Image (cartoon, rainbow, N blue to C red; front, side):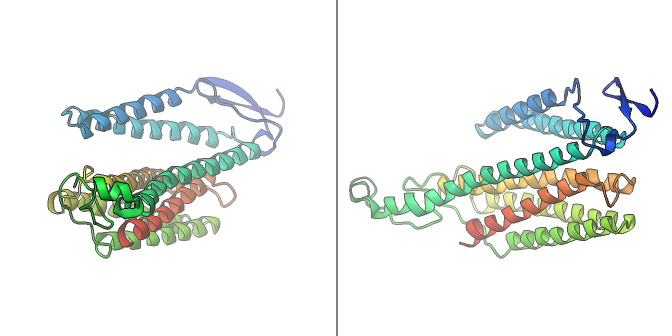
Length: 305
């Protein structure tokens, strides 16, 4: 066909008009992708493993790590498919807008995800604790008359035993500085990319990856210290559960974000991005800034207040 070209995608051959990659007249839809199924299996295995591990099943930890390995495999495989399709010109401006809208909705869903946990923290501190301390006279007088603790608390039953909290101005403050700095470095990388300076783009991206990995290392050390020295565990009542659910899920998001940063660093080094076309970079940058903002909320409401 005159004025057309043939590409091979997902083991299928497609004939594309020469202007397809730059107009809104055609919308590429992938066919026969197995990655959504792999993602579902990986997430299911991970959740089952975590549930068994938290409930004392010896095999739970191994199942969890298997699920995490499958998630990493799925991410690299799915990213690879999308990258190949992009490089072969299957995506036009309309697809690019769809990616942007999809990323916006994804980040909004993540905002609601963390809003639920911050809401649980607010409910425990602002509503439940005053109720136990006398906001409801009958409950305090007849059930928990001797209870007089303030936040943080593990409840009238002293669930999990006595514990100490993690000070805000140690590791948490260092991690705050690390993430804020990483927000600056990824912005500098974006500016370098728009200036078509590949060397500085890769350099600042590598710095962002290093800051993310350092954050994760400090958080791992913080968890070990909390469990071994402070007796602050996931079983330390309402405070322990909200502390680990909020910081743990945030750490998981930092881990995923770091993996994505590594991917776009390698892509930037290979010259996959141009000043005009680099949504993959922008999507990861949006996600990373979201992670930064969530951590600021965690630092203030979990560690400081």
